[in-house]
Amino acid sequence: MTNKNEIRLLIADDHAVVRVGLVSMLTLEPDLKVVAEAETGEQAIALHRKYRPTVALIDVRMPGMDGIAALERIVAECSEACVLMLSTSELSDDVARAMEAGASGYLLKTMGQPELVKAIRGAARGEIQLSAAMRERLARCPLLSPREQEVLTAMGGGLANKEIADKLTLSEHTIKTHVKNILEKLRTHDRAGAVAAGFKHGILKV
Image 1 (cartoon, one colour):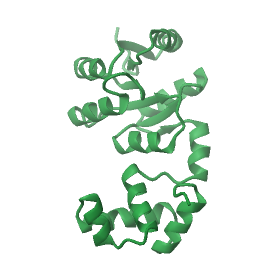
Image 2 (image 1 turned 180 degrees about the vertical axis):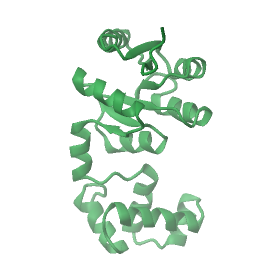
Image 3 (image 1 turned 90 degrees about the vertical axis):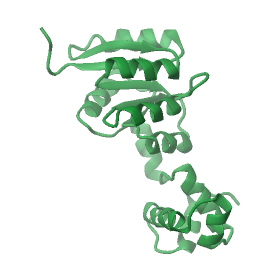
Image 4 (image 1 turned 30 degrees about the vertical axis):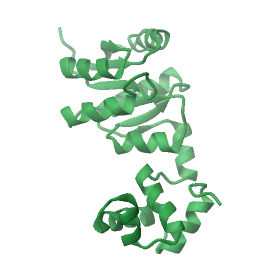
């Protein structure tokens, strides 16, 4: 008999010990079922296409195609895909890349079983998931995407929007959108304030 509340999982990690540990841990929960395991990004894409899991847990760092590249392909094929990225990295750039690519969350591998299970269930309900440690980190340092960081760096160099557009080979309209998003994320009203906030949060370096 099929459990209509069952959460079907795909686990992708190049380390067999990690996969075995996750499978052993998660199958203890009555509403979680691991339907597929992958050890590469390419396998994760193929297995997601075949099984259409409720939630996919994908390691950020894998040889060949990394987890974020696999995430981008999965989301491109299945816009409603729910993918949680797993990592040992707390780097803001990695988090930004993952969330910008369409991840439903970014979790640290150091988190405990109760927190991981809770995150999976939350993601299945459509909620964005970040580990407690990551939420604290992002509360201290606003999350700018890699492109936004490039634009902010150019702003710090005194470049106008058109000059930034030429430098990054983007349209001036796109740069204006990035600048608007940067001001909102850094909670400031002008470019000077954004640059100052960039140095304050360590996004920009002297």
